[in-house]
Image (cartoon, rainbow over all chains, first blue to last red):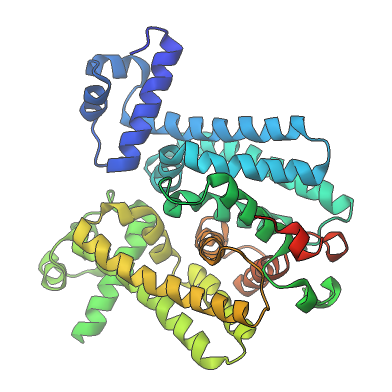
Length: 205
Length: 205
């Protein structure tokens, strides 16, 4: 293990996320984690109060990864459409890079106590707000049509957060190509332009 | 409890799904389920071998609900676009009607043993194939453009299966309106038509 405490903590989070992802939270003991890292159980408890604290740190770290990537996309692009596109590319790519963290976030969050859930909720609110802000920007420029931006944002989260369940790293499609296709679907829809009615007619309340 | 064995089994599945949805699979005992139903534990074990068997039955029943609804949509509509639209409406509405079953399906499936997982996988394959068949039909008629139908199908599953996490029954939006907006997004995308490039130019490989 790393001797730097910050790196050591990060390493425990990564290894625990992989074990929780592979064997589930309930199916993994702190002993399993210490064995996988070849450290004493005391080392784990030096950084984390208990298994739930570790789960919280994995989920919080997953949110941090995403916020960091979203903010980079925002900094790097000034064109709002390009910005949203890049937020989505980075978001989709994370579901491959951090597959087990995403899986733990989706499937194991219910094990957290209310106090931890509230902290995670606030973090997710930041992610949600970042998407809503970009969608509002595009709406202001009349580049998008949507009568409910929250539903659009939740559609994004659903499409992207589902990727870890079906994307195969050993398959033939690169994750960047998956991102491209999901973005095309999100921006243009699947129906052919020729068959698409005028938005005002098609998009009744 | 109902005296009809089939109805009694169904009732146990419904009540257990609600408890697993509210308190999680790990946080619910067979005793909790028997208490909620006001029956003996022996009654539960008469129908189900153990808690895992009950979980399997909930998830399988969730898949049956969806397949039943998908098949109804297929029977009731001959126009392929209308058919897909109605498959999606029914699918979205189920995430409200059977919220806890959907939650258990998404979050608790990893507790199943390999044998049960394989049966569920085959059932999901039928659902996936039903969507792929409809998408192929639309593709044959040149009504949709997509260079990967599997990615389109997984985008649908993500968007729809995510609804249980954010849709509030006590909110102001009816589930049918959520379905309508998600279908609009899926069919037409969010970008305004005026800004949409010709499909062949926009949808590079």
